[in-house]
Length: 155
Image (cartoon, rainbow, N blue to C red; front, top):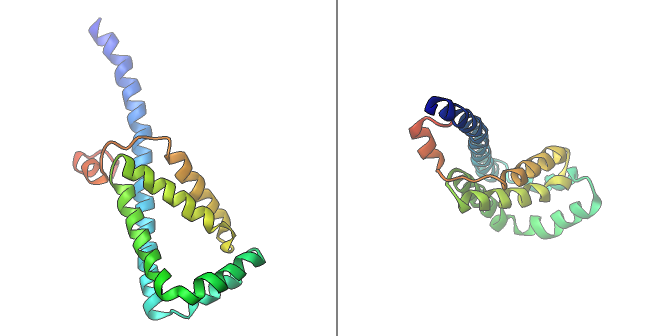
């Protein structure tokens, strides 16, 4: 009898664990993506800083171009490093646990939503914003490092 009762619990637990594993892998992927974004900002800032003003040329709507030219370009020396630090912080938050992960997903959703009109990558930014919003409905009791140590990320 005890074996029969334990069976369904194990199956339900395994299913939930599998779903949680997918969300944990997703936050690792997003964390790596934001770290690569930060690295890209550093490299562009050092090797090709002139590219940032040109980003406005790709905007999907004129007001976005105007805002970029008037609010971003004049302050690139401050904003570019801030975006780099923000993306590193986002990566760390997503790989942490609990509320830090939720804050990371909320910040990631807002960040990606703000980029939707920035150019041809808008649909990808919209999809990433939606992924972050969906991820807000999960719980994250462990850090990614803890999951890796226990072998729970599927990696």
